[in-house]
Image 1 (cartoon, rainbow, N blue to C red):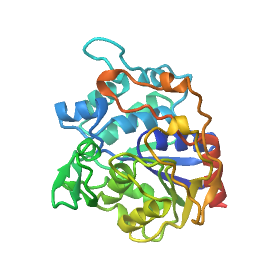
Image 2: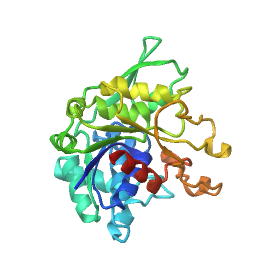
Image 3: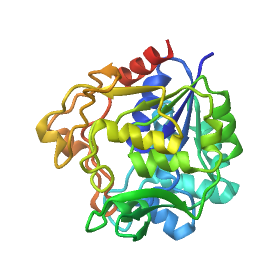
Length: 315
């Protein structure tokens, strides 16, 4: 069976995993662990854990929707001291403490929630993503980078302290027939995974497809063109990706907000219209409680369309 490994984190990777899992493929999601925002970031600060939020999101993407535990993982508290907190994050953090390993905790929770496929954290380490700015200043932490003022140009990103990829993640990469990088936050998710010690070496000789983000992200890719995105991936991958998958349809102006559409015109890409249908009422439905704001994500890749584009690359 064809083995596909996805690298990313958060909403974008979850959408891709949903689409691929419906095709009955052997799918593994390797998830970043340096997010320090929202409820996941709160748990990191309290207990010194790797980030669990993106891992939990990917578990729910591949979990059996009829499974009660899988349904529980999506619950967020709406009031009180836990307003905005994710029950799934709490369960995963508790399991990590009991098992002594995020990888083991994810494996156990995956089995209990009917996950079809494999989810692996890229590392057991709790290092942060850091950025060196054009001013000479260094900023440590994903959300500190995103919210910096002024938004001086980022020269390079790195881990502080360094993080090492797990043997399980490296083994999955070495066995992959196709590795799909993204969609996700360019520097603090995708590049962050590439920076984990061992990942770049494991990707040598592997077919790598890069899913271009639909929109720019404030504090990370302000003013970036499609070519800028691809060049940044190539810089940390050590070579250009073998294929670029891109959405070619402009999202509705009201859904974009302050971001810019990443128009792939001029690049050789696969894909086409990859947009998930978005409606104005989604702005309310996808909004999260105020205490741990990390969204909403109104403009997203459609799981089925994105999976179809990946299959075209495979063929």
